Image (cartoon, rainbow, N blue to C red):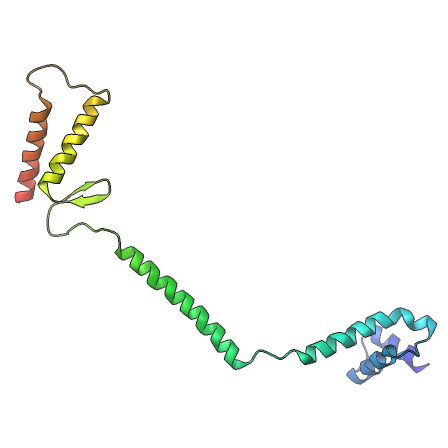
Length: 155
């Protein structure tokens, strides 16, 4: 029978497209002999896949361009956002003297004096007592440090 020969050619990979179409049409019919019904699900599946591939439209140029532009817009948004985030960092003034306290820049002497007093007093309260020697006074020590600081600011 001719169908048996086509099946052998098919499994050997030697069939043409027209011969494969003949096999698919044959197995779609109800006239399939009992000994060949084992191949019917294969050819029914192939026929359904071919029909499904013909009904799906390829991606058109407009949707390709929209996809590309949306990707480019997302990249641009990320770049612009990271630029503005980097601008929000507080930078210290480059032309004047300043002090960094807790990651922020200060050049106001009153704020610096207050921060130094708080820091030094907290150090002495946290277990590093200054000796009771009258020659060592923590306030004098701070004032001397501030004088040195004023000298640096005046330069």
